[in-house]
Length: 215
Image 1 (cartoon, rainbow, N blue to C red):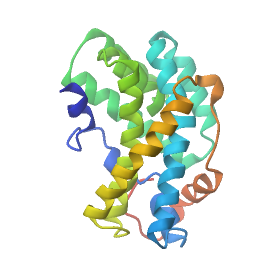
Image 2: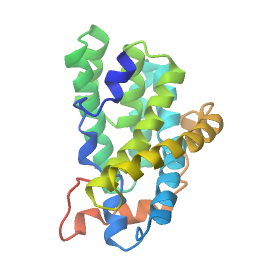
Image 3: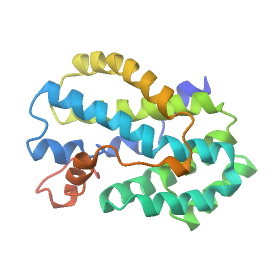
């Protein structure tokens, strides 16, 4: 039940205010068809596996090392839009967990996130450890959330309808399985940028004339 609550769209972590670069890519003409959306979605899932999952895993295994992981994430995210979004989502996720399931460890993590950068990946890993979510479930939750977030943004941008988005979400299960198999053992030392074009497009988000999302 805890996992269902964490992944529910009603969970107040603020993730639905972000498109993970999809809006900027769409306005640049890069997402002009469903196959293009599928490629973007696949690349985003793999990017999450190589940039988010290693930090989630490391923070889950060693919450005491959160500050170092937070600093590593900040140095790695050179894209200002992605960096800002990661801070916003991380702090919001930890704050929501601390308010919904108050405990000394989550309250302390919330304070640490406010004092530091509070990036999403290490913050989510440490928070899920504080909630006693097993590491395998934590990794699956993060990857599923990444795919669902892009598809939810695609619906609101009018790229696909809700039924087709759900079909694509189902198809994501195969990609998620491959990503987990490849990236579950990764640690913070294995961070890698696997979607540089998407990252470049996202960096232009603040220059869009009109936008629905914060990133």
